[in-house]
Length: 222
Image 1: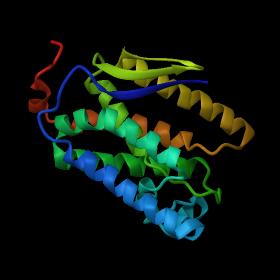
Image 2: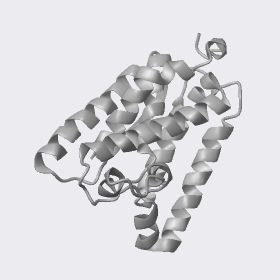
Image 3: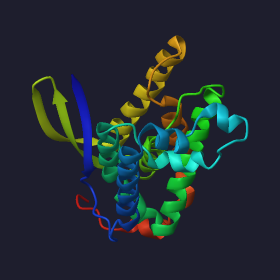
Image 4: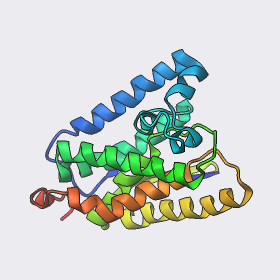
């Protein structure tokens, strides 16, 4: 088993408190607790089911589903990735623009998944599409930043620093390759199309949300 887990941007320190990122993490946590209390009935009611969306029903779930998760590991993994890349992008965009960007990225990601398999009755849920948009914006804004990363390989582990362009680029390549495998066999429980759609949204449009005056904040390592 191998894994690379980003822990944060080691090349800069945001000038403002990541209030929106913290708020998003809090909302995701609260909704997950509601899922635990409500069970499958709650999940079916508020997750995005492609066949319902394409028939014009329950379109609000395109929004609500991006705050839901399938398991403890699902939400913990997503929130770690959000905390690794979100604060720097919130600082670069400003609170309000960052919130709009996050929500727009999540909606585009979820629509990508729905349109990729419009007749599916499998619920789609998770913040990973919106977080992929944040990562897409990060790679075009700070490609040379070093990401503090926990690397685990079987029984060996270490913390090292990896360029954002490599770490995020490798992650995106895995999403594309895994989608190809899943598409071939018509199975799989991960919304790879949502990851791809959200990431591309971030790459293409992320810089439009960035306040260029904020990009001059102090770099810790020059």
